[in-house]
Structures are given as C-alpha cells and as structure tokens.
Amino acid sequence: MRTLILALLLTAVSGLSRAAAFPDFDGTGAGLSVRAVIEQAASAGGLIPEPSAASAGSPVWVSMEKSAVGALDSAVFKSAPVAQNKRIAIYEFDAATLDRLAGEMHKAFGRGPGFFAHDSLESALEDLKEPPAVPARSYTIDQADRVKALLPLAEEGNIVSVIKSLSAFKNRNYRTATGIDASRWVRDLWTRYAGGRPDITVETFKHQAFPQESVILTMRGAAEPDKIVVIGGHEDSTAGYWGGDVSAPGADDNASGVAVVSEVIRALVKGGYRPARTIKFMAYAAEEAGLRGSADIAAAFKQQGADVEAMMNLDMVNYKGSEKDIYFVSDNTSQPLNDYVGKLIDSYTGLTWGTLKCGYGCSDHASWTKNGYPSTTPFESSMEQMNPYIHKADDTLDKSGGRAEHAIKFARLGLAFAVESAK
Ligand code: BES
Ligand code: ZN
Image 1: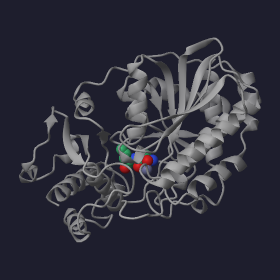
Image 2: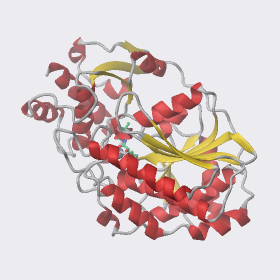
Image 3: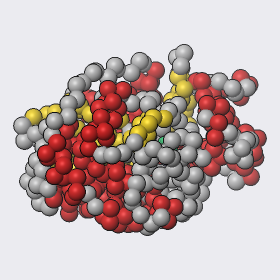
C-alpha cells in the first residue's frame, strides 16, 4: 500500500505541475487534490487484481521528466529513483500499481501521466541517454494526379463503421480478453482489406510483457522496399483503472485513428495503388499503458537498422473541438516533417491547421522520435478545447454526432501523405 500511495502522490504532483503549463488542466479544478487521490486509493483497498495473463507483482520501470515530479516533498522520496540524470528519473513499480496510478491520474486530471513504461531496467536506462538526433530528410510534393485520383475513394461511412465496431468492445485494454479480441478484429479487417494482394502482408507484433498484440500491414515497395513510411495509431483504450471489467469504448481515443488508418489502406487498395517505397500501417497495443506497443516496435526497427523516413501517428481525429481543422503536436515530433505535412494540407485540402504542445510524450510519435525516426501527429483540436470525454465510459461516437465528418479529413491527409512519401 505504501508503494501505491507513493506512486499516486508522485503522479498527482506530476499531474499538478503539468496543470500549471495547461491552465485548463488545473488539478484542483478537475476536482481532485493530491490528498483526495491518496484517500481514494486508500479507500479502494490496495492493488487491483490483474485482469488477465500478465503476472501480478511483475516489475515495470517507468521513466519520467523530473520537472514533472519536482514539486514533491523530498520526504516522499524515501525510496529513491533507481536511476536518474539531470532531467529524467526512473522508478520501479509493480505492473498492477502502474495501471492503477495511470488510471487515477486519468480520472483526476483528464489526461496523464506522461511516462514511458519499460519491461526491463536496461531498456529504461536508455532513456537517460540523449536521444539520437532525428536526421533531416527532404520531402517533396509532386504527385498531384495520383493523389487527386485517390482522394475521392475515402468514404466517411467506412470510418463510422470501424469506429462502431471497435467501440462496441467493452474495453480494449492491453491485458483483457476483449482487448485481445479487438486487436484480432483489426488484424482480420486489414486482412480482408488487403484483398489477397501478393505485395501486401498482415502480421501481428507480439509483445513480451502483455498479451494484446500490435497489428502491422505491409505494402511492399516496388522500387525501394528498404525505405519505409509508417502510418499508425493505437488500438487500445482506457477508462480509469482496471478494478473490474469496466467500459472503455474509446470511440475517439482511439478507435477514430485506427478507423482512419484502415480507410487509407482500403482506399489505396481500391485505387490499385502500388508504392515505390514500403508503407507499413500499424495499430499499436498498450499506448495508454505508457506507449509500450510502439516503444517495442520502434526499438525493434532501430535495432534492425530499418530506414523509416516518416511516421504519421493518428491519435484522436473525430472530435472537432476547435476552429481549425487540424493541430500538429509540436513537441517530440519532427519539425521538417510537420512542415511538409502542413504543406500537404495546403496543397490537397481546403483545410486549416495550427499547432499544439503536449508538454511530454503524449502519444506513439514519441516512441519513434526517441529511436531517431521523424514522426508527426496531426490532432483533432487545440489542447484547450480537447475532447472532454476521453478515458471515460462516455467516449462514444454520439459525441461526434454519430458521424466521421472530422475523421474523413485525416483519411484524405493520410492518403496524400502515403502517396507523396512512398513515391
Ligand atoms: N490520445 C491521448 C493523447 C492526447 C490527449 C494527446 C489529448 C493530445 C491531447 C493518448 O491516448 C493518451 O492518453 N496519452 C496519455 C499519456 C500516455 C503516455 C499514457 C496522456 O496524455 O495522458
Ligand atoms: Zn488516451
């Protein structure tokens, strides 16, 4: 219990200090003080049982920005971080505690905590090193005929249908049976969409520390197959913590992103498109548990020396909370890549765009950046006007009017991005 309270305190303060940077995430305004979080944890009676295969008591190593925990009373740090540098500290948690602490913070602050969770201390220690510089790439736009032929093939109705199917799973948690079923559902959908084309394969990526699998569809490049473009989004969902079989439809966060990735695949295949470079479409497991699915994949790609030229992350694309259509996450992403995707928007759509800052690695783009690959996250709203329903049982499609009017814009952008980047 002491570890749990420590963990909760730690993140409570991390949430509060992040709140300072984002006035709309005021910790007290969200209704829960640090003390309330601790009391809530205490009254809930300790650690939650593991919902599925992963063994209770298995350790997880978490790295966090120290600035996020700096406001903590030093007395709380009786159990010191297991390692740290000037900027980052690494703490060991029990895997079940980690879920709980993430859940409490989601409940308390609407988002957070920003952290990377690792299966091993060795992997966590990598976070203390300076991340590799992301090499500058040059991106060009000169495929207007092909892009314009493909854009009309994206259909809102298909996006709606995928969001409905994915949000119908009670939850898509990375350790529950329904979370595993949902990832198989994505694998089967993409296999159907591939239509038996010999240059397309669909595989799952198995993760050592949890049972939900990531899904990868590869469209092999005809001319330069070793050059890779990635388009992906996370398939898992969360709604607080996993004390029971809770409802987490995650229609916006992030059935919408997976639905858009799926529609890009479907439209490209329907249009008979064959890339010169390889395109890999991904549905990541366990993003809500600390970017764990994408972390495993991006690290494996780096280890194999894979040449990923650009990665587009689609996480929350169907809630139009703001005036502009699209907002690029400006931190932990590649500025040249963001600039290029902004130009794609200008060239191929009449859409407007702006930028936002998360303040920490808030989604799977950060896993690619950390491994030296350029990534971009076009997002659905400004930070101030973000979807208030995420991470709750009421993240449902009706909050977007039962439609995918906003998401379809991202599908068109994804099509332009695929064709221009994989030429
Ligand atoms: N989709 C969110 C990220 C997000 C939310 C980005 C709002 C921008 C605005 C993502 O699924 C998420 O919840 N991320 C966590 C952090 C992660 C490391 C567990 C978060 O932001 O709380
Ligand atoms: Zn989320």
